[in-house]
Image (cartoon, rainbow, N blue to C red; front, side, top):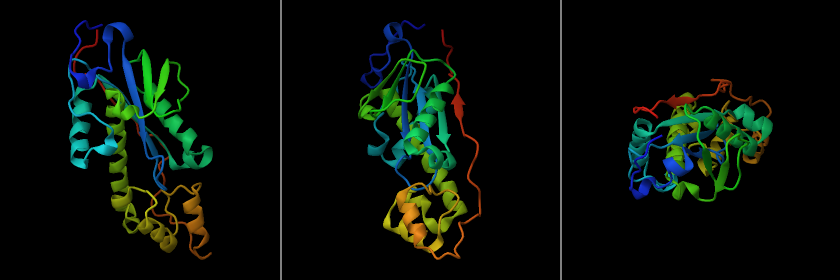
Length: 235
């Protein structure tokens, strides 16, 4: 275990000697009407401070993309995981979010001594964990996780847009904007839409019976998980 500790204020969430490794966890995509929910878990390296970490929602897209690459390059390890649209519709969005978070933590190359999760609910883990409201603005590792999850999901939305450009996924990222709801009324639901969400169901009820659910493209049934290894040796 390393004995040197960075004094950078951005990285004070990790104390190697007292607490061991700390993993931050956050999600992206609970509210949208379409697409998977994404979670990320990150263990930062206090020997490689990252400046500018913050809640992904208050950062510009350009800054998020920049930090996304820096986090991937400097973190000791990270994991990005998803819960699919089918899982969201089957077990509900809250449970699917907890599932994605658990997959992210379990996918880490290193086992943390503790986990800090943004929000007021915790996934079932075998590791001591703590829920922190607004943790994405308070704990650097959670901030990093929020950025990874957000950028990953935004990129998925661009892929969704390429498959179904008439919904405008590239603009609203699946959220229930007036334009998105109108597209649902006109075109019905795609394979990416969460039919368990009331706005989707309500829009579908207004579609004439002869309008079938679009089958062009299929929902992913596998979990996309990305893990990086540290560039420095862990002792």
